[in-house]
Length: 324
Image 1 (cartoon, rainbow, N blue to C red):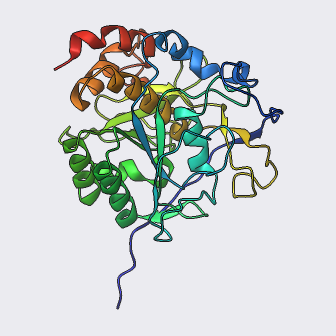
Image 2 (tube, one colour; image 1 turned 90 degrees about the horizontal axis):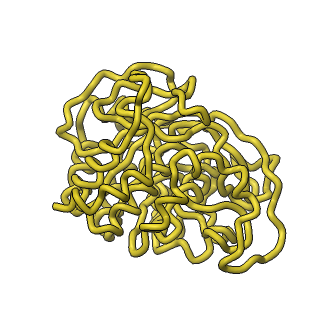
């Protein structure tokens, strides 16, 4: 009997519509929906941008693909790959990957839509999950390795909803893929998951930065998993970002191109964006992870926040002292 491959399923927690910003826009004009992006301010990203915007950095989004023609991702994409269909057109038929991509590096100050966390970075879309949000460990592994081999500087794994973290705890091919990526010089950032449960602490043999989710008050999101060793937290509730401009699972009633989702999947690309800022400053993967962790703040010592909420401004300021 042929053995069925391990299958994972991705589910978004919340979808809220957002008004479409009209007009073609141009560079150096404000993003009309910027006022709804509370997370950028919570992370102190605007202040960090005075030092670095992540130029010359590629963030691989290993996910459901991307809306390749989205106006707010225009000029932000580099060549990717589709491991679901086996071709070089990683079109997003779900919506999740487009949302994650916009959080990380949507075009900023172009007069339309939203601002990305790393305005100078580029997105490498790697499709490993299908239209229903499901995929296999084999394709996820291939996607991670391919992205690293193609020169990705940061690899974002917003696959927490699909049970990625539970499988990382067990070891195996996913851990090997992440270790391979780290050896190639890529920082791997992964969502903790949305089961509201404590993860069994795992050894740091696998070089991955785990991200829990926080709300706009800096408190743990009700759904966030926690307990992973040296995890940090970032905004993950009601996060506005890009969505496909055509019907998908996440856009059946909203093809405006923008919307809000909640989950650790949204928190992870914000940390990937901060990693991109630090990469531009010349830090290697180990220094990037240690800098982000060291700059996190958890004054109340809340277990669900891990080491604490990420502070992009503090991270870029101490970065020069942490170069290897």
